[in-house]
Length: 145
Image (cartoon, rainbow, N blue to C red; front, side, top):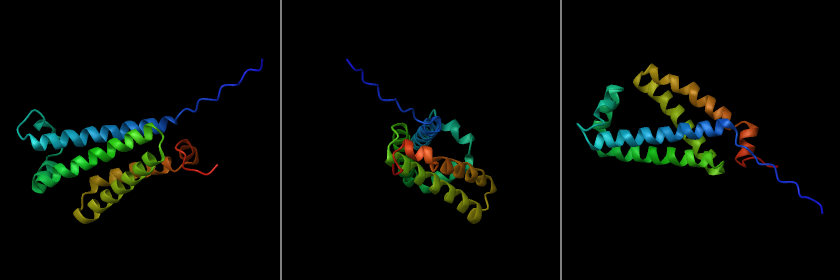
């Protein structure tokens, strides 16, 4: 009786799993930030010591800050799930978010003169380059076979 060979189990590149965790962390941070805005003076208020300038900016935005952070949390959470599942849409969403982040950091540096935001540019570019590697694109089904 002939035996069938089991199909090899394809393992996701570790980088995809790490980026999935990165985006999940981004979703959690955006959610916590939104909650800190909704509950001023609450238990999350000490987070503003990390970036008091962000607190001032978010307060200036009013309820739009909560909406923006909700969208960021949802987008990051979706990218995390998509990358974890190795879905093409997760890959595309992650690339979109990273390109947007790099452009935002560059714009912040040029328009507002905030040099510290430049640190995010090479990080985002490194992640983008990684996501565009042929092996990673194959892992998410984004290349022709």
